[in-house]
Amino acid sequence: MRHLMSPMDFSVEELDKLLSLANDIEHHPEKYAHACDGKKLATCFYEPSTRTRLSFEAAMLNLGGSILGFSSADSSSAAKGESVSDTIRVISCYADICAMRHPKEGAPLVASQKSTIPVINAGDGGHQHPTQTLTDLLTIHSLKGHLGDLTIGLCGDLKFGRTVHSLIHALIRYPNIRFVLISPEELRVPSYIREEVLTQHNIPYQEVERLEDAMADLDILYMTRVQKERFFNEEDYVRMKDFYILDKAKMALAKEDMLVLHPLPRVNEISVEVDDDPRAAYFKQAQYGVYVRMALILTLLEVEVC
Image 1 (cartoon, rainbow, N blue to C red):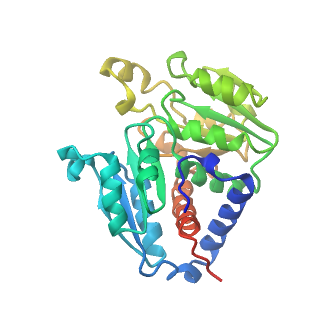
Image 2 (image 1 turned 135 degrees about the vertical axis):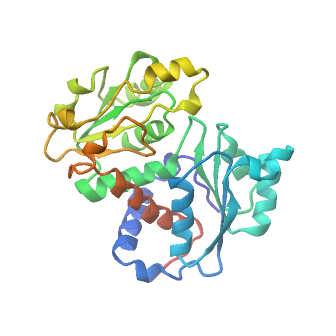
């Protein structure tokens, strides 16, 4: 039995196989419509979510399975003080696989150690968000045709953004990857990622504060929102929340084949005027999230479709 806590849990070869399966699901959905008949997915979300929770549920329904779970800690026995360990022991009696989101880093890992079913980390605090990373990799691979030889700009909240941290970990395993880290001083990538991930693996990167200074060089621009829920006080959030706004003027500085990605939800960081630009790929990205989660469920349940 396998769990998914980090994108690093899969080798590059396993990732390639997963992305290939997701691609086949995209083009031949009817082939997989009954692959999980009789199987149940539990979505245990201790934090609010739209895309991640609903895309997991859509993925299981598309596979012919069924779903159960809760969408906030308040609607579960966590409100009564039940531990994650006890919750997953109970969930293991009801479901075949579990997707868990939790505000505390490491909570899904604790659950996986006590679980008798596969557990998927659907986001733990500011730590990891591996299924978003799988979505990002599938989006880039599908639209660019490859995952190496890319200059990737990461913009916005690079300090608390778990999607950014997971994506960096995943992409450094591909050849000729370069990062441009675009953020204000207060929201820079944590030092352990700079030192233990980028520098230690000889990954070229630069840090800039102005988005305009980076646009011309990028193959991918990965925008993120400044996350109100990660700030300890309102004043700091208000000061940072509109630091970057991607608009038509900035898009005019970019390559014709650059892609704009965003894990969503967006607030103000991408103007709606950018939505009609053919380089805006963030809504396609949300669709790819369903395909890759379908592939992940099949992989962890060891379901093979001929």
